[in-house]
Image (cartoon, rainbow, N blue to C red; front, side, top):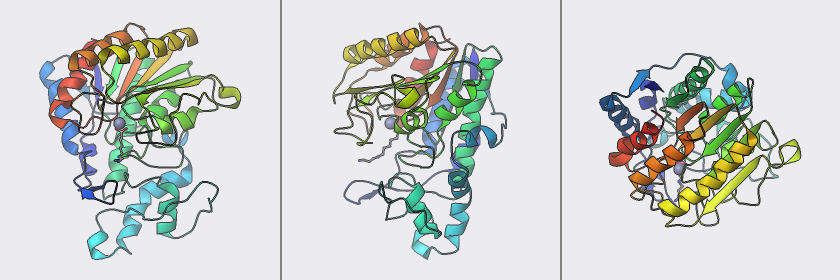
Length: 342
Ligand code: OKP
Ligand code: ZN
């Protein structure tokens, strides 16, 4: 029995569409149903105590994200309502983005949107801020339960967080829940962040890149072929004082249980050597073989084995929900992962 933090506020973020490559407008894959499926699977199992998050306010969020970016997230939707054409009111989503080395921050709303938004996969809708804030509070609540003695805690975060950088949203992510939790814990002890989502945890990588007190490791689809394309390569190992404290494990499409578990063992070996006081897991279930977006071939038994291997570290562990887009299977997959910690 360990705590699971869930807030119904997640449902206030429900974009009706997303933009695919080629400009195709499709129904959003990142839906409120995802969190509802997870919640019912965990509730039915009876193995967890499901709790509302506490309110830790903005301070732990502002320790990871810039104040101007957070202000933008909080206020952008209301501002958009004053200027959007009728048919574009649902979501703020720019069509022009700042390029690296071209980083003046304009005053206009669309200029700032292009500055803070890193791709077309993080539209800001009516309840986006409230949902993202509540997901971050669940993440901090899970971290906080570890410092109160829990061995394991899970935050049912939605929207996810690992693509959000210090000053940017992208890939369904607005506030980096795992980074906020890890940074909160880092005041007490060294922290390792292990990202098992199918996509590279580029936001988390960026946030801790220069820090030796937070080890970040990510197993994911090779960015050469897969989102987020521009980060997540094996040659990226941290910089300055953080050199040696980041590691990426890019894997080919079709990766199955055995290859994945071997690679995971190498990552866990690095964590053992680091001797952290806490572990934060970015738990994306889009590694599942039948995922709608992911291209790995991990089975549910494989997910259970991943959980068992991580649990064998015997570290105080806070797990954060990231991706997972086979909504039907998502509850059972999360349950398979979490049961290894019960
Ligand atoms: C979020 B998480 C490319 C579309 C890109 C963004 C995926 C975001 C995944 N065809 N879509 O890591 O699960
Ligand atoms: Zn993902």
